[in-house]
Picture 1 (cartoon, rainbow, N blue to C red):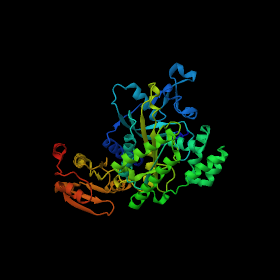
Picture 2 (picture 1 turned 30 degrees about the vertical axis):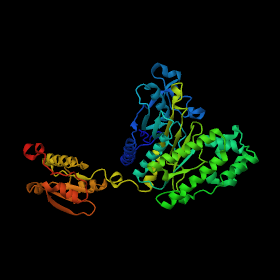
Picture 3 (picture 1 turned 45 degrees about the vertical axis):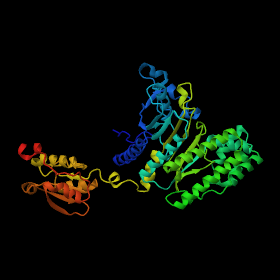
Length: 481
């Protein structure tokens, strides 16, 4: 008899306890920060009606939607009426349309749930992964952008990141730059794809790609001349160096001036520059401007962003830790009218990977699953051990209870294999003296303490124990069994 396959489906992952603890820690920190900003939680079903999703992500996106066959007698038709959630934005749009009369005028929500895409699995690319979105609906004010930037920044700082920069641009600024440079509207997307690689391939590389994409010589030269302004050096992009902050502020002023000069009377482009100036002004009030750098080459999400574009990058790491922007034309797809909207998505999976590589997780997240393990001396003392474990848990400790009356050596070996730092033993001699023994699994040291003083002793050993006397659970005492 052959054994069944045990690996998960391609592109899917099992999350073992250590993985889950890391993810829950990151999600918990992000939630706390977002709720401080007044964002409310939202959850939507894993399954949506197929017509809700189809046609919302372009032809390529349609191919990546996990479709669910009709059930029962309809299954043989091969037709699908449901699909797994592809992202969190389209479900948000559906919720806004469904509950428009119940939601506040300005709907501020965060949503952290898995999504599914029928993509080709590859390194770092999965068919199931978490998205971590935060959005504000109902306002066109640049206060929204400033708040989103501050919230995302605070979340990363709370997780332990400090070496990141928030790059911002504007969809209308890009239109103004390309128009004023003489790039045909039909070639705008081609030009932006090339310009987005400026930092990677340099001016000559971008020029070659622009030429290959059919951009005329004059337009190419005007574009490259504009972007030739000396940028802040990459090594100087990040906090906490105050000199870096001043360099970024100076760079932003220079870039705003160049944008005004280059775009001139171009109405759409000038409106975008005004928006960027307001974002910087409003962000300054919260201190978030210290991390913001204007980047006119930033060109992400052009298919749906209508205003400010945002991306967060970490020093010496390719890719980003998140991105977002304003998408005033998207959320109203179910209402028949536009709804002002701006959102940001943190790359939850990438954040966890980077934090693991940098050893950024607190010790209690990545180390032992419990602070203490309580042993069982013999069958007669099972109730005593259960009572002791219960008492320790009431003190806020994470307590594992060995479930069998095994030899102590086996119990110690088990605790050691799980990385549990302390073991508490209640043998016959200890019970007679109303004492317990504490074994330090790292040093091997073992000492006796009075039962009443166990909480204090564990606190002295570095465990976080809630204050108050450790009391015996009378209902579980030996005399009551």
